[in-house]
Image (cartoon, rainbow, N blue to C red; front, side, top):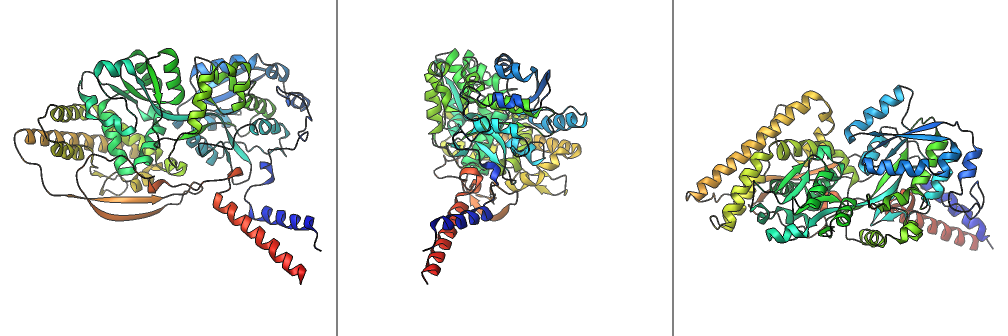
Length: 586
């Protein structure tokens, strides 16, 4: 009879040949198999790291998108911890940089021989970008045994939250970044202001386009958003809207959201305006909402059900750090429920930790509100979000938004307020209102500086121009074209409003537009594009009823393998086992 053990060995060999995940993803060591043996919490790996060669008197440099409050509180807690004291870490220096500056700062530090040690906070898209550029150090514990400390803490983290991975495995099979916190995206409302102005509480992104919020424009905006070139969290929310509603309808939603809103220079500015009662609602990342609720009981954070995402906010060790032991120790501390995970629970921060064990600590027991928020966020309905697609269009989206909705905001808001108030006052019909909205928000033509031909800002064009915007001449040409085109469109719409108010009928012809569908997988930058001509009528953007077809991603299983690939591997293994069984019987 064929040995069962031999069958298992053959099966395992097949899995190793077919799988794309190398042995370094073996983060779940068996009990006692870690290099430090059975040392107890907290920080069982500390004595082991002390035994490895390392310098003392070390200053760690961290590039970050976190606010100064987070960095200062984390720095104080870490430098007072036994980890910093026993590993000779005397200081932490933070480099606060916008996402467009990260590559430059990291490269300049490398070229100067003073490499940045750790990247912390900024979202998956930013970390995936610097990873593609080769700036992240894979957690290869065969060449860097100190990385075992990070992998040990990582095993406490769920592999996915609300369907999103909590860490990235590269093509080399090693972990490249790990989520240090989780984030959801929605809006924070101030119920006192809502009641004072008698406006509805928004529940969906679409609700923020309601003309009822335009009642007091342009003098008193009741909603708030932030300039995407100055806020990674608002950028992510705009990307969510474009994927939740589809590219064309998504831009209609974004345009009307901006028309209703005051646009702030930072996401924290939106949060603070809601807390103060300057506005009734503002789009915010979750921990800003929880901070608002903590500071003002009239505030409430709302996740748009079925129209948002929950993702991990990463931390990573950067290439060529001079202090790999200390960098690994810091990252492991950030992930530990006895270390950096407790920083998120500070009442001045209020972030959702990624390690749920922190709620079992003494400090965690005192934050049952955040525990409930954690459970709500990780079980909420979300969209399938395509990280690759967001990366392919992010820069183009940010600058098109900046030119058309921020730079031209005065014209947009004045025209929108005139349309909305004419409708609310009964001066125009619903049909006329819908027609004017369509005219206000539909794509306009501009000259492509690459070809000299007329085009519109389609999804295809955003992908095409995304990297070209790094060139100053292309950037300047497009920003001018986009702002001028937007202002002309808004002025044309205002003139149409005046014609309607004077008794002219609205045109009865339909408008032919081009709808573009792009399918992009989460593991490749290749795109397949199908263009079809469709006839559209002028209506307000409908709320999404099905997941968007242009933004599908392949769900991945543990270790980064796609579910379909895992199923295929299992089927092949079973087939091999059955074949061997029958061969033996013969």
